[in-house]
Image 1: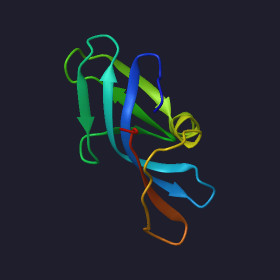
Image 2 (image 1 turned 30 degrees about the horizontal axis):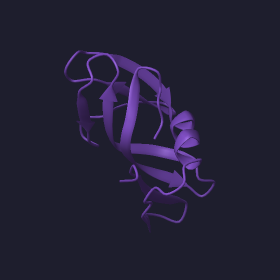
Image 3 (image 1 turned 180 degrees about the vertical axis):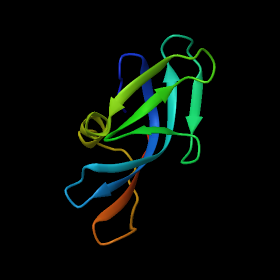
Image 4 (image 1 turned 120 degrees about the vertical axis):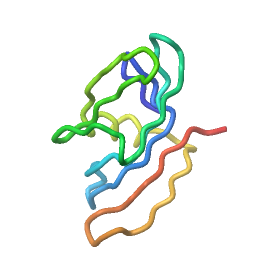
Length: 101
């Protein structure tokens, strides 16, 4: 999973367009490099930007904005990750990205 410098993205759930770009991040689990603790965000608690997502640690208040394109770019190059897809509309697919055991 992606390492953003301030965080390691352990897992995320996103909706993808037909071109495989991320249209919306729905959930994230992050490990903070500053304090080492895990934080999970869901669709109701995630902070989003136009074309991006705010990564934040609930424990030490470490924060970072990341583009959805960067998140997608890092995840799409991985092999062996479980990806389950179900059609949510004609132009959007939902993919779950999880680390390999």
